[in-house]
Length: 351
Figure 1 (spheres, rainbow, N blue to C red):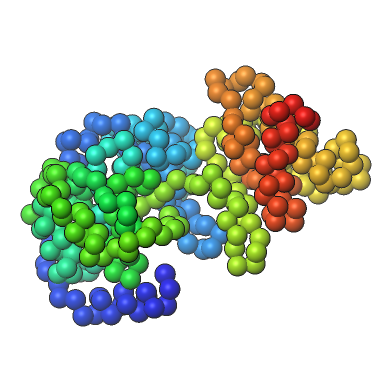
Figure 2 (cartoon, helix red, strand yellow):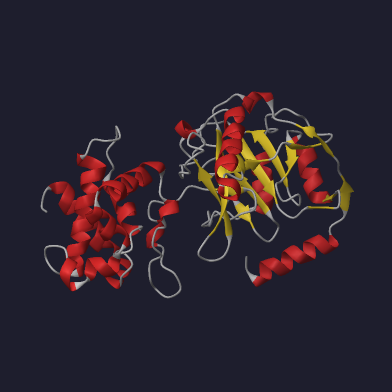
C-alpha cells in the first residue's frame, strides 16, 4: 500500500462513525458445508517480507503441497478440510496448515472482504451498511479487525477487484477466501442472492473501471501463483525466481522423485557450485550445458518416467527449472526466452 493510501486508510478509521456488532455462534452455511469447495492454507513470508496465505492441498496434510485454488478438483468438504488442518498441526506443529479457505471458482459465490473496519466490538458505519444491504452470511475475519460477506452473484469484470485506500476487495473467481465461521450476529446464517444490481453498484462506487494487478497478499484472500510469476521484473530490472513452495503438487512430486533417486538430478537442481565446478560440468563443460542437463532430467522424471499418472507440460517444467539453484544466474534472470526455448528444444527432440 502506498503512503497516500495508508494516510487515506488512517483518516478513514479516525473519522468514520461506528456501529456496535456482536459475534454469534460458530456457523457454516449449509449450502456450502458439504460442497467440495474447501482447501487449506498456510501463512508464509514472501521475499518482500509480506505474509501471504498460500493455498495448500487438503488431501495431503502429512506432507504439505501447494495447490491451485482455482481448480475445483482440489476442493474437499468443510469437515474434511478441518480434519486436514488438525492432522497437519498434529504432525508438523506450527509448520502445519493455518486454516481453511473457500474456493470461489466453480461456485456461484462472490466474496467481499472489508479490511480494518472492526475494532473493540464496533464496525465502521459504511461497512455495516454494506452488510445490511446484502443481507447475507457475514463473519469476522481471521485478524478480528475485518469482515467478510458471502453472496451469490457475479461481478462486473470491467471493474478492478480491490481498493486499498478504502480497504475493500470483491472477488468471484481466481481467489480463495479464508473462512472463520465467526458469524456476525444479526446477519443470516445462509448465503443469499445479491439483490439485483447491488454488486455492480458497489463496484461502481468503490472500484476503478480498470483491472489492476493484485499481489495476493491481502488480509483474507489468496490467489493462484501465476505461471509466469518468476518473470515479473522488479525494480532492479531482474526477474524474481520461483521458490519450491510456490510450485504445484504435480511439480513438487516430480522434483521430489528426482531428488530422492538421482544424485545427478540432486546436484543440478540444488548445488549450483558443484554443478558449475571444473570437474563436474555437464557434458559441454559450461553453465548452459548444466541448464540443458537439468532440463533433460526434469523431462525424464516429469514426462518419460511414467511414475505419476500424469506428464508435466512445457510450462510446468519451466517452473520447475526456475525453482532450481542453477537458474539463479544472469542469463536465466534477464533472458526468460532462453529458458523457454531450451525446454522447447527438448520437447521437440532437438536435444
